[in-house]
Image (cartoon, rainbow over all chains, first blue to last red; front, top):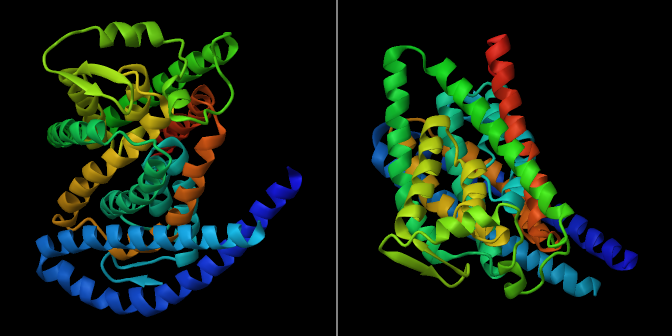
Length: 80
Length: 306
């Protein structure tokens, strides 16, 4: 039981590290470039901005959920 | 990091860490965590209007992740969630109108503060009484449910009141096979409306009132109440996000950064529910509304917003 917990914890820590690297890359590559265009959209087209905001957060949620699930499955699979 | 929409300078690490902890709370309890996220954003200098709107956008993303995970665990009643979304949106609009009325009367801060303290303390007191009584009684199962049938059997010391509510045969009756409950549509809409009213009146997703109401009034098993509440929050918080975005209250970049932490936290929270029985989840829920009450009392006594 203790071994299993240790394995799960190790897999989780590795996942956190990989995830952190991916997220830092995402900040610089995507959010950095999105900033200016979203700012302009927010000033000039509020309704479009509202729709885009919801689509962006849902899209990111779906992608990140897939990434974390994929990482968890891979790492758990390897540690078993 | 500079966020041009709100004009704020906030460390992305701070946002990710805050998002991570709120994600765990959301995944485990089915709440939006606005009572923590709002003050956490305010603490780094974001204006209240942006804190409220941005938090709602972040709640949408976090709820998508947690609800997807709960759906995989069989904890989402889609039919119930869709019906509740209608009542919640209606209630949220009425709550927002009440706020506007109080604003015009000039006593919005005092009234909202007193109401929120009363609501938070009442919920916590009731849940601590009920869950402890259930856990102490012989019928109070303390082992985590492993099957769908076991999840539907969720003992509660308040079950006699729930059963009498379920006996009200007011047409149309709605059968919810996923939750194992048949109940009047009007009772579902009323519960959702009250949740929405608090959401519009006190801000956030109001999961702290809807999740317990689903368990105690509708008789939905705790695991399903958590998952269904999250699914319902996706719809109602999306509506709230759009409404705030067109008023210029949403910095979606802050929400996106916060959500990178919440995405992993929500998964951990959702997976953790598998290891706890319903009454234990309800007992662990108790401190959350009390944290909200403490924040409001602090604000009232010092005059400073956290």
